[in-house]
Structure formats: C-alpha cells, structure tokens
Image (cartoon, rainbow, N blue to C red):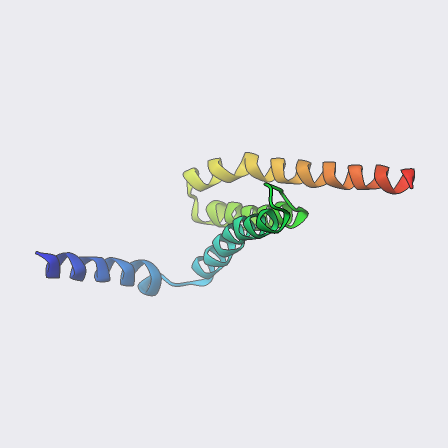
Length: 110
C-alpha cells in the first residue's frame, strides 16, 4: 500500500515537474518564488524591528511576483489564478503609489 502510494506520488510529481516542463512552467515557478520571498523579507524586517513592519521590498516583490503569476494564469487560462491575482496586483500598485506619495511629502517638508 505505502509502496504503491509513493510510486503514484512519484509518477504525479514527474508528470507535473518534468514531463510538462516548458518556458511557462519555469516562469510560473520563478513567479511563485518571488511571491514567497516577500513573506521572508517581511519576516526579517519585523524581526529586526522587534515589531510587525511591512517594508517597501514586500510591496515590490508582491507586485513583481503577483504580476508574473497573473501573466502565468492568463497564459495557462487558469481562472483561479487570474481571479486570485487580478485585484491583488492593483492593491500592490496602489500601496507602492501611497508609499511614493508619502516619501515625496516627507522630502518636501525637510
């Protein structure tokens, strides 16, 4: 039983990651790595500050990773990915716009 399950899992992983490997799969994997890296950046920044913080790099990685994931979903015609990323990308853009606007106001005040 365990042997057949492990064999089935191995066949599945081979099919998903090797047999179907193409440019878009590599693109999607890079997108997911960037999207995940944002949480690592946020965690490190929070640990260093001793409180929860959201650095600009979090929003940049969110935008790049989310945008790439959205492009992947559009190319692969994956409705779930498209629905999950389309609004999020606009939220990331808006947060970066607010950060830049706030920085501009701060530099004018100095």
